[in-house]
Image (tube, rainbow, N blue to C red; front, side, top):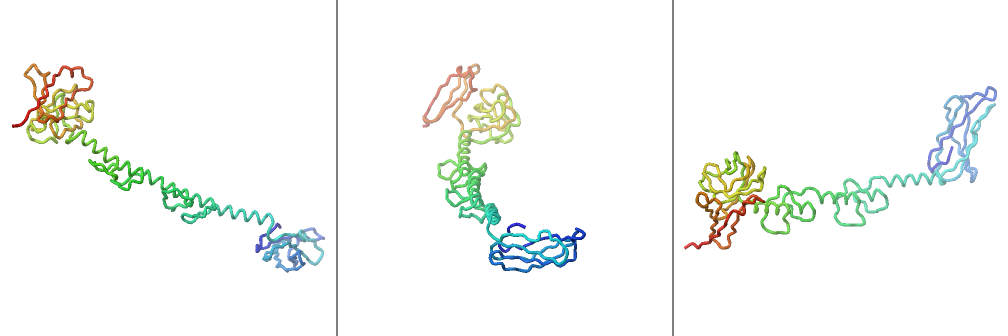
Length: 325
């Protein structure tokens, strides 16, 4: 047997043979004593016959550290194999190794939530239910900081206003446009506001289109309602190519000037909310003369033409202002 820990139960076995037959003998009544080496104190142990010449004791538990030996005896013409042995209780390398294993095992045990003693690896890694922590500290776990990082980049709720995370700054797809500056509005709200201002008016999807007409069920049945406004396809092969509406028949068909190089298709369009000015055309054969008349010196007069078209230079503009009497 080897060394034991204090209070560990002693277990010892021997083998007894007959000197006449050299075979193991069962049914004998051997005795065994544990002897303390420091003072010779003897402790009788209970012996159990396990068969075929094997006997063992299992009832010795020593609470005091020290060196011990075992003494076996059996009457008759027999030989005991393993008759005397020595062993140590408590201390030594076995005890040191055991204590080290306990410590190592403890390092990997799950800590209490937000453990702060920082003495073992488990304290540094943390526990699954550690709460997110957003400030550098000397007593928070990796788990707490990882949760904080995740919370900073997750999708924000609509119009969140706490302004403490990246998600709060970026915003949510459902954020509504805002037209005033504040310390709590998201980037998404400002982008939606800019798009609304840039495109203006309302949007619709065409049910039919040619190079100079657009038909859409969403248009209001009011003759000339949209005349003077800019209509722009926002999808398809003519996307971004704005044209001024020159006529509206009141039955869902717009006419534009000038024609697109090709029909925009049944795509989405936007229409500015207000006309860009009063539009006049020259007489037949003078279609290259376009006159814009505004009623305010500060009114913005604009001409929308196909980007890069050489014929833009063939148009002549006369900007007229007049005062209402």
